[in-house]
Length: 114
Image 1 (spheres, one colour):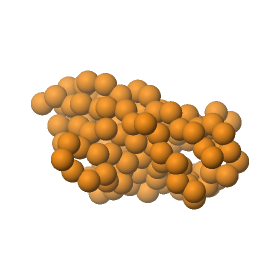
Image 2 (cartoon, one colour):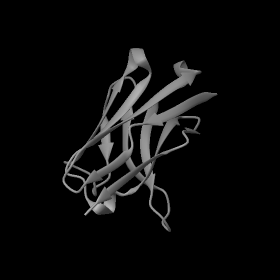
Image 3 (cartoon, one colour):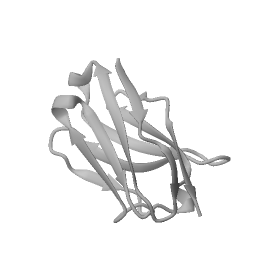
Image 4 (tube, rainbow, N blue to C red):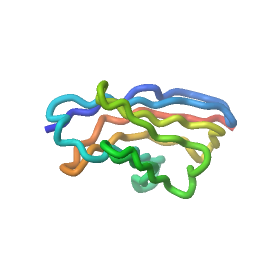
């Protein structure tokens, strides 16, 4: 089992930046991918970004491409999401996910004021 703890959420004005962190513990040797998802009020959880743990290849949702960057620090078992040029529609609870056996963090709230 992998345990995930997100941090770094908060309130920011539109156009601002935030960096989210997700620290993994437990069976971290089993991780092959880590991803960020988000869920806005009244909406389904949606994919934001994913990174391969070994090679570092990254993938993004079209809605965040060019504004968000996912990265990882393997020795620290931590994945980051740098979010720039934030928009009101980025407001959501952001969740970290590890794979291939899915584990989820508890989420961190990001609120962007317009």
